[in-house]
Length: 109
Length: 114
Image (cartoon, rainbow over all chains, first blue to last red; front, top):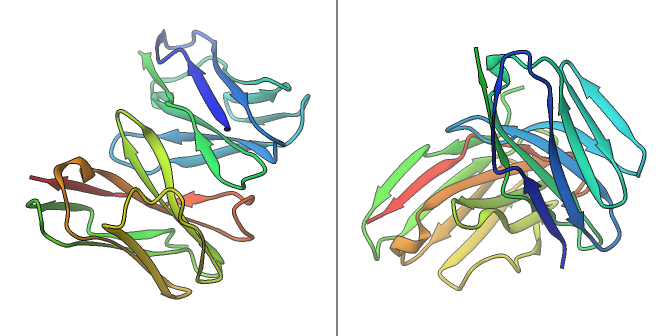
């Protein structure tokens, strides 16, 4: 059974303080690892898809990386508007997205 | 593009009543997904359609839940009869080229069953 574990559950940072969120996964035949951002009261918003170990993608202050067992979402010099819940999901051979519980990120000004 | 559209945004009903949630996918997308999000279980796939045909409904919790997609631009998720444990946020998502492609989510319907 495909599984995703995200850590930490919650993270509070000061504006400008860089950090990383972790997504550990077990999957039968990885077809893709997805990162989404979710703001309160809204649907998940797509950020990145990674397909193979060693792949990296960047968007503004965010960079996602992938190994055979985990993915990291690096946040560089975050701003208060980066506050949100970040969700990681994997797609394996069953062709279903399996989501982690998310990391709730708060950036204090 | 208008994105995925869901209605209603909020629904409050009493136990035993029928509830119907509606979704309009992004125009041109051929796959549609229904998810449920709760604090305890997170975001879970209920069912997905490809070209209006249900492909995998293994996530549907029980026979009280049913979903239809009569055409490429409309889908419904029905709960009959509803129970308090069905209270959750229900999301619809769509993708362009099947489940392996990026899924774009709607704003969700917050369902409260009293």
